[in-house]
Image (cartoon, rainbow, N blue to C red; front, side, top):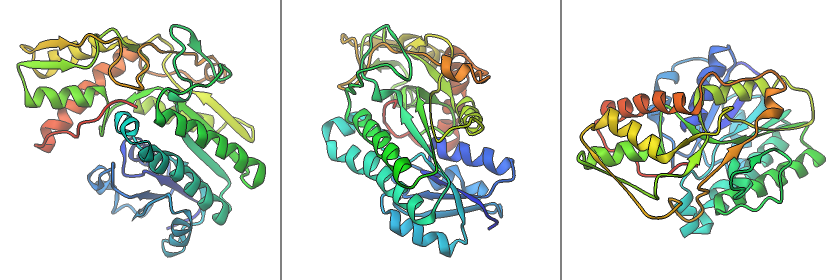
Length: 331
């Protein structure tokens, strides 16, 4: 493998595999590290014969083991893209150890890898979940106080703090990306994923968690990857941006109807009574992306357009696999 190499933790996952394809298309070597607890080798199988791609099944929480493995794959790691995390928020609410181990300690491990390998840039997949519930207020990068309502959000916030300390101690540059709800192919979790799975099991009825009035912004993964690469060209030692669409999002009711119309048009939609889907859910969410827009980046798809495209992609993924999709919820 040629150097320098881009190491992607969670490289066999949803965002990691999309990022890898884009980097390889640009002629950049990638080393994909994944323990396959949430990712799938099937997401990257067609890439593995490419001389620019190397895959290792490793737990990135063990930073020393990943650093040692770099020698065996001949990787001089210039950039670490830390995309690995627990993506099942309710599971983390039920058992806080899940997000401690899979969301925070994986960050600690990835930073240890960066320290040992003297990597130049640490790119981090953070989340809007670090903010907490701001109601109808537009959330900007300097909004506060930061009061996450899920263990996932708490551990993403703790990870940001750990990265900040690493920049002070040894890391030349960090890029923190605060994601909204990201959708597209290949899907491993999320509201569309869950609705498609439910309709595959009960084509005559779609049960929805909550009253359907929850409203959030949604970003297609292709726009997300474009934004991350754009941010890489912005100067600074500590770089931090919200990434998202420029609109105020869509409701869960709209998503349910879009999935129903595509997958099972005769199905009846049954909504719950609560204003939120689960413990740790933020029912209404508005994102300010003015800081990123000022640098010249704009998404190609609105929330509604991203939903429409992702529904077709995820429904097709389910049909092609011939198997039920994994049940989970959006992160």
